[in-house]
Image 1 (cartoon, one colour):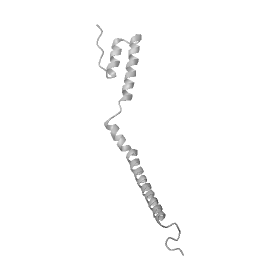
Image 2 (tube, rainbow, N blue to C red):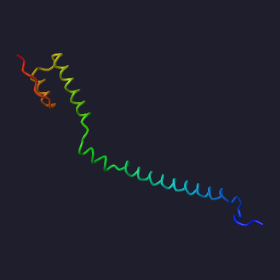
Image 3 (cartoon, helix red, strand yellow):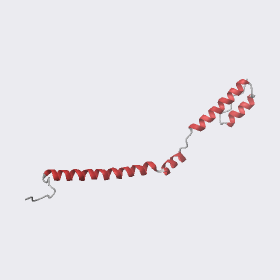
Length: 102
C-alpha cells in the first residue's frame, strides 16, 4: 500500500520541486512588474517634451547659420556681393558686424 503522495515521488524531491516552481513563478511576476515600470518610465512623452521645452536643441540652427555665413563669404570672395551686402547678411544671421575696411 502506498501512503502519502498519490502521484509518487514524495519526500525531499517533491518539496524541492515545489519550492523551485514557486521561486520561478515569483521571479516571473517580479520580472513582469519591473518591465511594466521600465516601459512606463521610458515611454512617457511628457518627460521628453518637457526637457526639450526647457533645453531646445541648438545644433541644427547653428549649422544652418554657419552654412549661410560660409555661402555669404564665398559670394563676397567671388565679388558677387558688395561689402555692405555682406555686412548686412552677417548682421541678419546674428553675428557681429565685420570691421570696416581701412
